[in-house]
Image 1 (tube, rainbow, N blue to C red):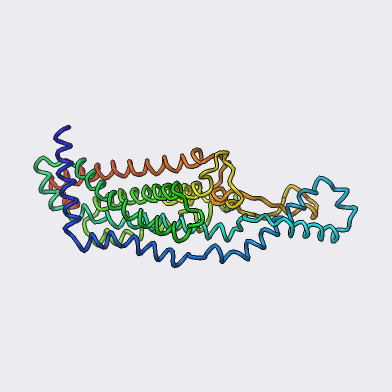
Image 2 (cartoon, rainbow, N blue to C red):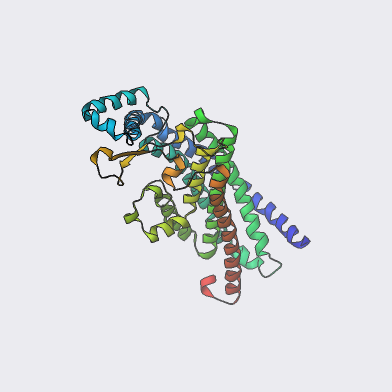
Length: 367
């Protein structure tokens, strides 16, 4: 065990020195996060204000339908007064009570985009920072494998250095993005929560990039496969087509399986849960984190009863759930992300061992 830790310490020093010596690569790695964050802020600044008209229309509609729903049981009153007259009463109630703060679906999409893009950027930096590590050092690894080379120490040292670099990158990315786009809601707890989730998603990407670097034979292949890995993360991450809004007849098992295999989807859900339920001990989302939705009530036959309104929490609007407090809602996502990191790490170690054994036995595919 002492030999393992000694080897790990040596490899940590070597990998850190390699990172620092490459001044161009170091500064590119450290400066890309602030630049990405500034571009995110530039693109999304004021996106909430863009939805003001949509919010106003949806709040009035929501208040109107809510007033209709309240009178559903009192059918005698509904039929005693002409429908047009009753409609004017509902409009007056809607104007008096606009449900200030409740979000329209357009505003919910705009707010969720901020978290989604932060996760995508973290995954991109983690994946791009690790996809070339092993393939560029393969000749050194193969030579050292004939001596007292520890695959476990090598992989863990790589992930440690990559994780520390990613820590700085995600810190800058999250801090700038939250301060510029979410400053009205800024708290230390909120910032630390988003920072931890973004780093965990990025670390999963680092582990995946290291695995990719282990099983391919050239840097060109590594860079070419990065977009191929990123596209499912973006397309199946839950923003472009929220799983909770897919109609039952449109559901696809293949799509659900692929979405469940992307860690962007789990990190995105965790971000939404954090934004919705942080500081809410009773588990009830505040009005400012609820989404007004209008639909048709299929349980009633009369045209008079058709309008229906609902106000799911922001996280439930994208991913179905039954409420609950922060810890109960975010637990599954954290378990999945941590499991991803561990499984990918073990797979990288296993694949590197197989590649070394194959190369030592003259297998050209492993060379």
